[in-house]
Image 1 (cartoon, one colour):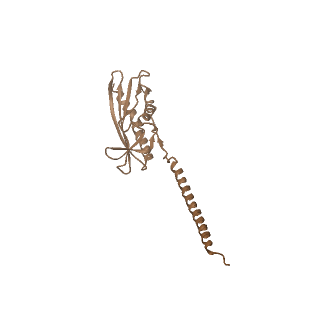
Image 2 (tube, rainbow, N blue to C red):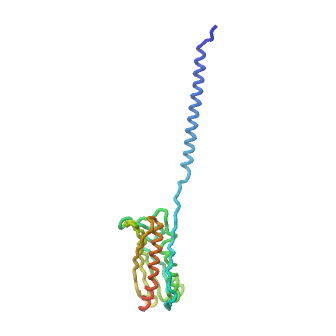
Image 3 (cartoon, rainbow, N blue to C red):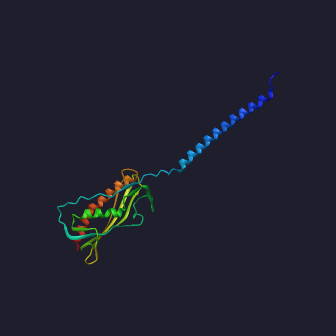
Length: 222
């Protein structure tokens, strides 16, 4: 007697169902693993660009042969105009608008970095120089104000524009002896913040080299 054929179909259908379930389960496992890996990546903190810090540290070379001014000079903390009283490095692409580099900064505000440079520049010029007015008796006081320190990209190559206002005051009479505004520009060697920093140090050096002569002439008017 021949075997009954109707039982063969259900067995084949059952096997096909098992295969389909295995394939579906495999697909779902793959999808779940992909979601898990993607979620782990999303939980990782975003990469942050490194911040670079720069300094103003140029020093003017003073001729030590010249006779020192027989007075004590006090150097007050330099001030800065709004927009430049920050460690952010300023640049400009169009008039009246200041922008700042995102990952390049001064190590401190330019005004604070300027003060020790003024002291070192003028120590060979005066009998004594003090950085803290009032700590000892002083005859004169030098006040400075940073008016502008920015990289100008509206010109090519870009320029550093430095404006510094200085004022020498007679502390005995409380009179202003002399005031001068230094305005210098220097070409940046590269189209980035570092090129501007190098140019800023060169511009500041030019100002520091003129400062002793300004003080000598001003003090002689007393």
